[in-house]
Image (cartoon, rainbow, N blue to C red; front, side):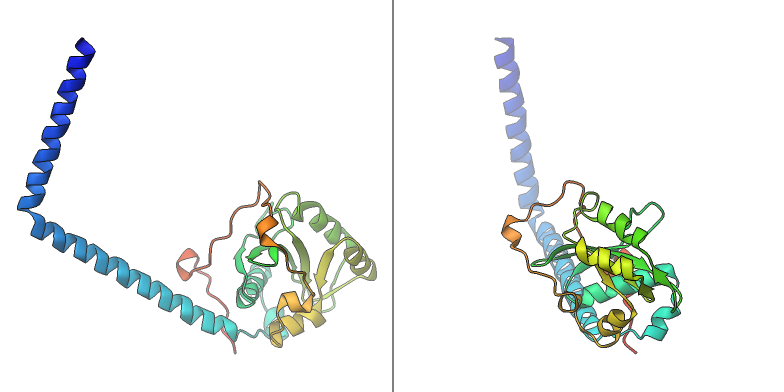
Length: 229
């Protein structure tokens, strides 16, 4: 009985509050309409600015060309951001993730038909060589840790013969100085350069540890895409 009385009292209070709210809205509807219209205008303006910025960025990236001499002058992190921008140019959604303890992933990208990619960046001197241990490490973490479909090691130097042979055998792709020239300077897309296979995205299962890749936007980082010379 007491519960029924309580429920009735609560229902009565709610009804009274709803009636009071409706009356308040009726008295102040012009103000509410102005506020709603203002919010709509602000949201639309932000959307238009974002779309304009996205289109302008896409145009800049479409013509992105990086010279090897310019790449050689970068530091390690600058090299990672350069690779990120090249992926963006090629139609990937990508972010730079390299840091201490990155488990052999400096850039992670996602493509609607190519899948998920992990790049390990090895910035070195022109005559420097990347050895097999790097390939072992990338193979051990790209799929199990980062949920990648494609693992690539990129250097502005070269690879030892054993490193290239091991990578070819175990699906760890490599981009040496000659391939980097084609990718960065000549504008050949990475998936064309490495003959990456397309994947049936409907059947793809994302690795539990793989974080989604958000579209890059200038507000997300102080780093900006590299400009074409």
